[in-house]
Image 1 (spheres, one colour):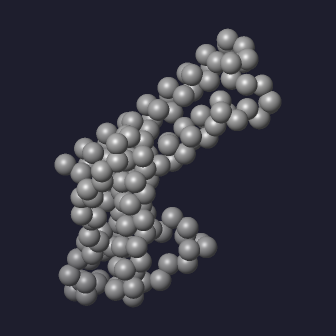
Image 2: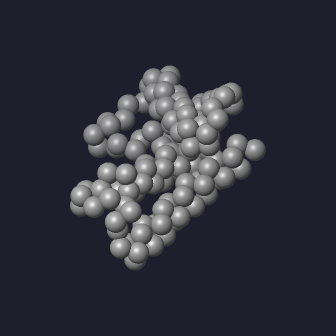
Length: 144
């Protein structure tokens, strides 16, 4: 006799949620700059993940304590949603880094930085840009 009356006895909560989730229809966004378009698309994906998780949570009668499980909305997320969220994190770090150049906390304008400081700043900016672009490529690949 089986231990469970469930039709899918090996299904986890994440699998159950994923089975009831619906992906966001492909958005049509007419924004010229890559960064602004990426922010709009990724923000829409992350917001949809949150709303759709709450819909499934209500429909299945599940209850997650957001205090004890702050990342519960990641249960059952689609791969492209995970990459969209990661891209937003990379972009957040990139924008914070670029603000060091625009609003120097040290009071020294960027043009007055020493050469080695500028080299380090540009190297970190390249690393952050490549991380952001890598996640956007993964997002696009996961959609296809």
